[in-house]
Length: 422
Image (tube, rainbow, N blue to C red; front, side, top):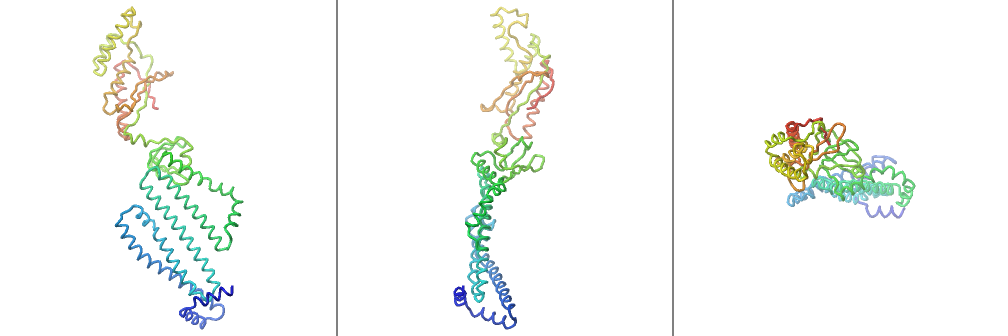
């Protein structure tokens, strides 16, 4: 130790520090002289560190900004906005102050040793700060792109922050208390179960983020529904622990990130991009209003242009079939004959095919079908797709369709019981 102190005293001794030391010892007595020397030296180092940092930032940030404006790279802009370059400059400022430190405290080797550790701690803090800012910059760029990688990048960046901070704390303890890393980790090994319990949501959130990104299930901005929580809205944020969803009533719901893969999540985004949206709704008819069509009824139905050709064709087909079987044409129960509900079902199909607001693409099913009869009546379900996915227009088209069908069914002598919505 004496050899180390002698080396410092000879290597870093300088006239300026000697003059300050002589002045302090001339006006301050005893142990307070050393205290005053330490205080003055620390003030000098802090002021020097601040001035060096300000000067370096003024110089380097000026040229960095010019370079960013020239390249116009979104990554460099994100690094500049998140002050990553400021953290890099801090490294140089601390390094210069560290070089000056022995010249100020060469006569107090114990203070040199303590401040040496302090500078290492400062470097660790700046290192953590720099990595956190880099993670924020990467996350900002990924959010701006708004794709499925966003979730993984956001989760990974937050995990990096936690890991960097964790090892930074380990380094701080090791430096300040002169304890080896193996001893610290050995002590923490006994606390593994507690750590897993504490970081359970963090671990699950990170794994969920990776799975969400790899399977491309959801991303920020998607319109989703989570039946488990009766939530429906747009995803505003997915982080390491939770996902924030803006409901359509302007409230915010927060759910654990791992719930996005462990529970049912309905994503409406593919529907939005397809520019189509399904109508799946039934009209419930009173079975007592069902009946065979008389010739008078069929003549009346022929006045409806949409099904005129259908009725004429079916009349010929059924007449030939019934005659071939020898059925009495005056008894409509004999053989195969048209019913008012069957004709209305065909009318509904023709109406949907003729409706310009309904998609007629081969990929979009269009179907009118009967569902299983219930004690309340027989449901006739309309299954088709609108040619728009915009919510307001979709609701208008759906309302127009059922306004028309509910009014038209009376022309077929059908009685509506109620509407069933899926």
